[in-house]
Each structure stands twice: as structure tokens, then as C-alpha cells.
Amino acid sequence: MSAAKEDVMRERGDAAADTPFARTNRGPEAVSLEMPEGRHSLVGTLMQTFLAALDNPPVGFVLPGGETIGTARANLVARLHFRDRASALRFIADPYLHFGDAYSDGRIEVAGDLVRFVEVVNRIRPTTRAQRAMQRAMQWLHRPGRNTQRGSRDNIHRHYDMGNDFYSLWLGETMAYSCAYYPTPDAELEVAQRAKMDHVCRKLRLRPGERVVEAGCGWGGLAIHMARRYGVKVRSYNISREQIAYARAWAERESLAGKVEFVEDDYRNIRGDYDAFVSVGMLEHVGVENYRQLGGVARRSMGSNSRGLIHSIGRDWPKPLNAWIEKRIFPGAMPPSLRQMMDIFEAWELSILDVENIRLHYSRTLMHWLELYERNVAQVRAMFDEKFVRAWRLYLCGSIAAFNTGDLQLFQVVFAPHGSNHVPWTRAYLYQS
Image (cartoon, rainbow, N blue to C red; front, side):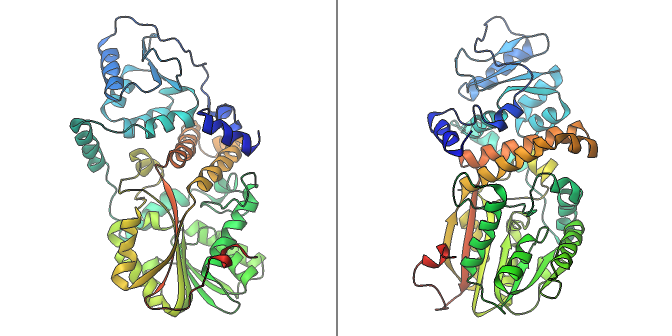
């Protein structure tokens, strides 16, 4: 199916209804549009009350024994099949956490499209004082821990050091684990990832011979791209041992070891003077309590004519990351709002030059990742187990839904020292080769 057709379907309200991603993630049972009514058990009554409190979204529940709960709406997106009543009760008590756990364990099956189901959930908003109070209580209960140097290292190890072989199955040739930039909606993943790197480099206005410092380098793709294509010298900091090893080996193969230095250390220990400061996909792991410190690191690294760019998942307003993703997938992660990001810049007299939101580009990036993941799912299962397969499927599908619904944003913020007049007159430079 073409990307243009997918976009038309989304505008029609049939988002991802017949894409490879939807077909891959349908449950084993077809979604019935009929919701038979009858007397409910105690758990069934609690489920019905739970749905009513959410204004009866187009979702149904099936308990063990076949008891069916839901509305009479004919446009059901999905039906959740609970394998035991204990899972249903835990789901009611704390859906933010226990849906992901039960789905990963196979105690909940989703008959229907997993992406569209999460989209429906993301669009639910608390409408009463009691609902808002409950949401605040759950957010407080699931607040992430502080990102100290030791805590950050532990968090990064849990997510990024699971093995480069795993990530290479679904990130593609560039090994870029951040939002791509699609010059056209139907561009391939590799084209879009390289276009993102060029987009970042043009925003930084890199020139041959300049020195760049990178806070958080992933597997090294951007650093190598900057050195190879733009002739700059790059020093990249990262606390993931697996990623650093991969990046150093990559630089050796490209004969760039003299132009790119990969340092296994925390961003807080960056030293030196540079023409550009860049951070792509790291801010989510910094923690808002450390933003001012990050700003200080950036400012002391920059001369009067230096430029900086931070690329980060974000929010339209402050809100914690989904509790299950923070606890099981991305420990310590916290996507900021733009207002929260300003703590990086204001205290250090750093001027904002440009802000761009490429949210829908991340949705498409994730779709490509999910397609590769499902193509290689047998290898993932052999590396780990079925629970891991299901957990990461939910993580990828849930992330697509979050960017589709605007629950998550993707910000690129360009900045420079206060008073710098070394700035472009127009934005034409962003779109020139």
C-alpha cells in the first residue's frame, strides 16, 4: 500500500486499517461488532463501570468463560480478551502499568489493530474532578527516578546494552535510533535517516575543519556522517558500552578514526571548545532536574559564534512518559515540553534561533522499524523469548500511536550564545544541498 493511500485512510478515520503493520498485529480472533447484553459477574460489572467512566470508547472486553463487556457501538476498534480474572482486576486498578505487563505475558490478547487501540486510549481525556485526581495520583505513583550519573548509566545499560545484534535487526543500515526526516512521504528508511542527518548538519551550518561535540552518540551514525560528508572533527560522548564499541569499530572501517573520537563518559564531563554542540535523542534520558546543568555544559563548550542543536521527543504540556514504557522499556525517560526545555537555555543566556516539530516523521520512522521487527521476529524470539517479543511489539505500536495522536512530539531546537549575529538571514539554507 502506498504512503499516500495510508494518509487518505487515516483522514477517513481508517488509520492503518489494512497496512502491513495492522495485519501483523491483529490478534488471533476477529473483532465481532455485536456486543450481547446480559447479567454480568462482579468483575464484569466493574469492567462495565470502568468503560462507562471513560465515556464508553469503542473497545470491548471478554473475560474467561466468554463474558462480554462493552457498548453497543458498531465501530469497535479492538476487543481485549483476558485469560484470567486477576489480570482483569489488575487492569482496572492500574491500566497504565498492568495492560503492558499482561499483554507481554500473554494474559491479554488484543483482537483488532493494536496501534488503533492505543490511539483510542491516548485520546481519552479525564472529564471529571475525580478522574483528573486519579490521573494525577497515578502519574505521581509512576514518576521516574532521578537521573544521577550512576542512575543514568544503569538506565542506559538496561535499554541500549541488550546487544547490537538485536538492534541491527530492525534499525536499518544507519543504526539510527531516532526520528528520520522524510523528504517525501514514500521515502525509504535509509534515505530518510540520512536526510535527517543532513537536515541536522545544515541547521548547524557545519564547515570543513570545524570541531563538533556530540552529547549522546548512539551507534555513531551521525558523528560518522558529519565527519565524512562535512569534513568536521567530532568528539562524541556516550555511556553505553555496547554502542561505543560499535561506533569505534565503524569509524575504523571508514578510516575516520582520526576525525571521530568516541568517549565512553557522561555528558556532564564534556570539556573543550567547539564550533557546534549537538544532541540527538538523548534529552529524553537527562531528566528535567538536570536541564540547567546540561545548558551549562553546552554553554561552556561554545564560543561566541558557535551553534547548537537539540533533537528530542517531547510533549505539548508536561506529562510523564507512559508508566509501563518507563518501567519496562525506557527506565528514567521523561519527554519534556518546550517550556521545560527552556531551562536548558535561559539560565545560560542561550538564544533560540529555530524550533521545528517533525512529529509525523517519527510515526513513519516507527512504522518502518515495526515492519523490520516483524520481518525478523523469529530471530528476536531466539535471542530472548516470547514475552520480550510481545513487549517490544507493544512498545513500537504504542509509540506509533503516541505520535499519530499528538501524545508525543519531536522537537528540533537550534540555539546560539546570546548576542551572536552569526545567524542566517533566511531559512533557505535548510533546503539547499
